[in-house]
Image (cartoon, rainbow, N blue to C red; front, side, top):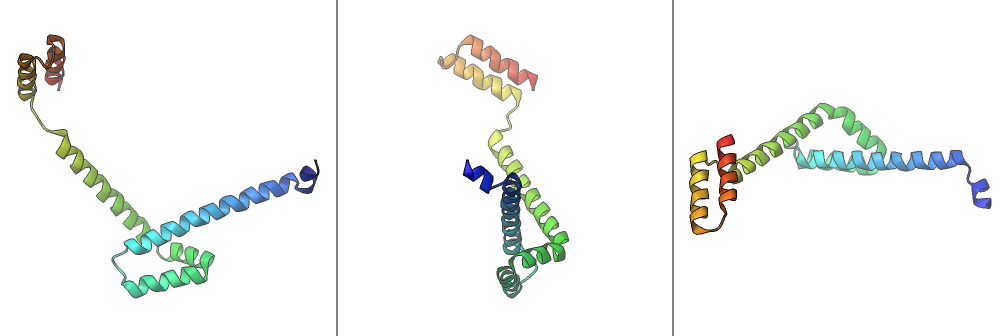
Length: 132
């Protein structure tokens, strides 16, 4: 009972706001460091300078980096996403196997003759192959 009176509702809201603000700042900090290590346009000394600035002045350093490098940060992030999508598309194409309907039906007939599948399963394979 005394806990409720010693810690009023507004202080609970203030604590939650501070906590989520800290979580957002940590997220931005990770974004800044990830962008710094991903960059190819500055050398090691430039990266070290930014890291030192962010470590010495945590809030100011993060916000200055975001203001100074916002355009490059978004471009690099977009390039990385496009690269990841292209790699995933290439992987999917490589494992998907491009076979035409006649090959699928021939393979199904082979499986049917060997007894690995039933006539109903062969009909389903044939139907799917002809639908594509």
